[in-house]
Image (cartoon, rainbow, N blue to C red; front, top):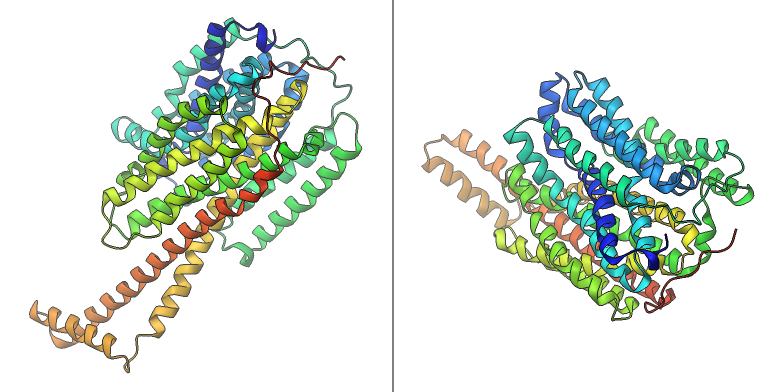
Length: 520
């Protein structure tokens, strides 16, 4: 059944069916973050060991993402979706039962493998189910899962863990999975042009993909923990990833029936869209990592409140997503992308203006505005990027789209975390170098601190030690503040730098009833 033959009522039922499963999968990428101490304590392991619960899921997820289009061609989209929902739900149940860390990691790998195909599959189903002039509404619905779920994941995870147990983070997927299975079985139909045309299995492509993407994800996830290029492991992972990915690109360009079809990159609109979604993932997840650290280290927020501080971004996205979906059908989407890039950058420069005296509302309003700006960018970007892709290649195109969003997110978290440490250390050295015995202001501050501690009852030696410790803390705070400001400006500038690329995109004809699938 083609998009134009699908009854309007059924379209939204299909959308609800595929997005219910996808929503729980995207939630699982961040929902466990705040529960790691509980998992570590319950399973008698260190928190560092427990982080493999996150890493194993992300690695498996990243590996399977780009091969989703190929798998859908081999198995059929409906069958693959049902297998994935069943496997993800079953693995979630096993994760909740896991009696040890090794078994939990094993089940998380299985969960990530089955769950990885849900993002691109749901997008492909929505793009095919809705006619071109209604794809903006479909992508706004899809965007709620892709953007709001990761933001609310830590908040939801913290509430479930505190109210029940970390095991219920996985058990809550069971009823959602059962309902999604029923709805996809009842309402989803594979399009007639999606059939198995694969004449042979690309074993070399699969092997190179698993090695390359797996090594890249491990490099990004573990780089900071291993002190990046001071670690032989990290250097090895990067080398393996680079060699495997370059070899994979050469392989898929020269082989018949490759695991990934890079031919879609010939369309400049799609290629630019991949670049923009990578940057969006970079800034979205990078800033999501930086802001809670800022609130906890400088503003004194507990971990739960720091997570809640991200909620306004999700609220802003939730408000603007439907509006963006309506605008896509009425306004040149390239203009919307341009406005979205500009609007999404402003709250980051706004955050760069706050200081140590900032309160909750000084963080709330920029977060709300950024969520709205991100939505104004995400919906037209998703719609425009896919508008010129032939229907029989949509599955492959959505796989690459989801992959680059996740790669951008991984790079964003890694780069922003590394830059934060670098800027902070450099700031401490710069500010500390100005505090000398010959600096009148520094000596006056030191004298005031000593006098204050002596007035509180400390002897001269103790008061002096406490004063030096306090000044050291003040230096660290100021250096950290400068570091966060620099990172917010850097993230905002990344959006502005991408503006010229929008002119390389072609305007989609949103009045078109849809392209006709090619004859086989």
